[in-house]
Each structure stands twice: as C-alpha cells, then as structure tokens.
Length: 477
Image (tube, rainbow, N blue to C red; front, side, top):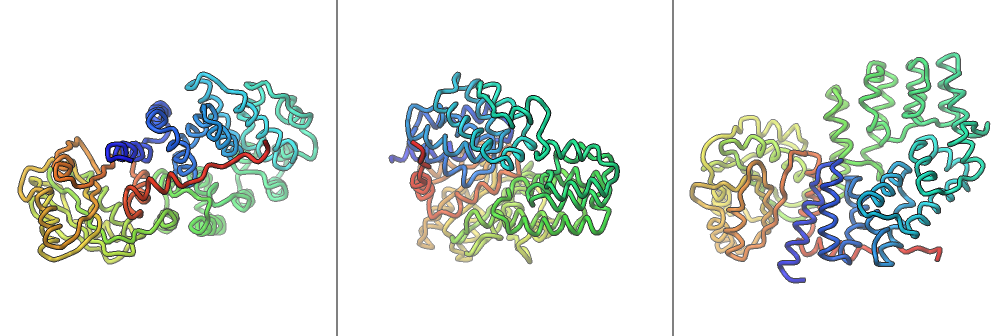
C-alpha cells in the first residue's frame, strides 16, 4: 500500500465519516469513488462501518452497492447484512439500487424475499415489522412482486387483520373508551409509541406510563421531543420513567451517540435531563475506543475563528472523556493560551473557555513552541484551524524544533474549519511529515467520528483494522 493510495483512502474515509445526514446524492458519489479505487477495501469498509458508523444513509448505500457488486463475496455479505435492517431501511436500499444502480439483481431480490419470508414464518416478528414499517413492507412486496402469505396479505393489503395480530389490537386501541383501557392494551401487547400515539384519544399520564414502559432506551431518545410536547416532562412519575430509560441508554450497546446528541439539541430540556443525555453521548463515545496516546489540542482563536473555539471545547470534552494519556490544550492567535478544565464534561470545558474570544493574527506554531519550552511531550497533535497562518513561529518550523528537542515525532491531525487553505499541511508534507485532515462541515454530531482516527496507534493501523474486518458469509447456499 503506497503512500499516495493510503492518503487517498484516508481522505475518503474522512469524507465518509463527515458527510451530512440525509444527503444521499453526496453519499452516493463518495461511495462510487471508493468502489472504483479499491473494491476489495470497499467490502471490508462496508462491514466495518456497520459496526462503527452512525449515519444510516451510508449503511444503506453500502448494502445497496454490495448487493449489486460483480464480486460474489460482496453480494453474499450484502445478503446477510440486509437481514438485520428494519423494513424502512430495506425499502430505501431497494429504491437506491433502482435509482442509482439501475437494477435490482436476482440475488438482491432473493435477499429481500428471504427477509420477508423469515418474518412471515414468525407471526410475532412479522406483526412487529408490519406495525412499525407498514408502508415500507407493502412497498417491498409490491415493487419486487413478491407474493405475501395469507396472514401478511390480510394485515397489509386487505386491512382485515386476524384477531391475534398487533394490527387488530391497534384497531381495538383506537376504539377503547377510557385511558385506562388504552393503557392496558398498550402494556399487554407492547404496542410501539410511534404507532400507538396516533390511535389514542387522550394522552394522559396513565397512557404515557404504559407507552414509556414499552419503549426501548433508543426509542425514548428518538421521541423525546414528542414526549415533551405531550406533557411527559411535567408529571414527576412519568419523568422519572424517562430518566430511568436514559440511564439504561448510557449502558446499552444499542444506542447511538449521534442520536442522543441530536435529541438534546432539538428538544428544550431541563438541565437534569440534558445532563443525562450528555452522559448517554459520553458513554457511547467511550465504547468507540480509548485514546492511549498523549495528545495536544491546539485551537485557533484568531480573527473570525469563533467556530474553531466552539469545536475546540467540544473536542476537549470528547478527548478528555476517553483519554488515558496526558491532554494539553492551548488556544492561540500569536500567543498561546493554556486552557485547563476542572472536569471532563462539556460544561467543565465551557467554563474553561468562557474568556477565550476570537481575535488577532495567526501563529499556528506558537502553542507547540510553548510546549517545547515546557517540555510537554505528546504523541499526537490535533489542531483546529483554517490554516491561514500569517505570523511566526510557523507550525512546520515549530514542529521540526519540537521533534528535534524532545526526541518525538507526533502524528498531526488538522480539523479544518471555515474558509480553509492547505498552507500548513503542504508545509508539513514538504518536510515528509504525516498529516491527516478532517474537514468540519458544521455538523457537531460528526465529531465523535474522530475517535477511530485518534484512538488507533497510526492511520495505517486504522486502515489495517478495516481490512481485517471479515465479510459475513451466507450459510444457506
């Protein structure tokens, strides 16, 4: 794997980690580049991302591309991975194949048929899928001309569900005369919140208790805004239930750090609940890896770098929460300002940064020069900047002096913000210094995606980890 190839793969991996949610065209273009560059690497990356990534658009596009690949091992891996998706994602994968790949090959149709027939064989499994993803399930049967069995036909197409089905119970829920009756039906049949909420006549605390008890921690997070709008936070017993689910979410292996952070930002929550959501995010981020290396975080506070300061404090909280090594934080213009927090939470770093304001010229090397003089030794340097340095000491020169005097060669990661140039990274590359870049596009939720980059011993280690991730194999051939 030569240097140019390795850099290109990492560049694409960075793009993959930071592409904004719900921009399928942009997602598809990045995947197309990676497939053309190295189809073998792409297959392993697809499986690695299912385990480590957050953006479901990417997960769907990966599976769509695997199912339409010319490589048998790709098609088999896509077949297996598709079986784990909820119906709405399977539906989106099928539509992606039609629109972007121009085909739904026989093997892909077989994968969807297997998906539907596996659910048909287990009425409870089928009912749950049909209730949560009714429109998507109907779309899958219809668009691929797959014949439903008698029960599936009755539930989805004839709208005369059998009495032992969840769809029938939903009809009874809509007819129930009192909140107590509705709550009893929700509890007995575990009717999901998103479906039940449209059928209940009056959302009382009794109904809310029943609904929240039947929800997973992730479902509570996903529906926090809706729950708040329905008064759930105003009733002590109901709020206590929500708090309990959020505490479970921090420990769960099936909760997204990304979604917890989004929910916290789009819902006007009290400080206690917001802190619980922040803890969910922190705990989920910790599961992505530990940073064993000592780290310097250098944050550009020169003119117009307000965004860099905001990103810097979030990165400081992220890194300090998962770091076993030293962390040195400096904000800089032409002077380095050491920043120290009394704790590891975002609120602690907010306080530490409260007097750091953007302004002045830019010397990207001054923080590193301060560290050289103080003999603060690190194994990696993360710098948040637009790379527009215009004053000495310049970073590349300061880096050479730092390495020479302290006998180390730290990895360098540049988090690019604002109207960026390539000045600093080009100066480093001229000195044969390995430098990786991560372009920040205004989506704070993408910052945890830096963890895989920062917690591996080197960039090559991360690429090798991806290549070592095995593709799932079909066991039904």
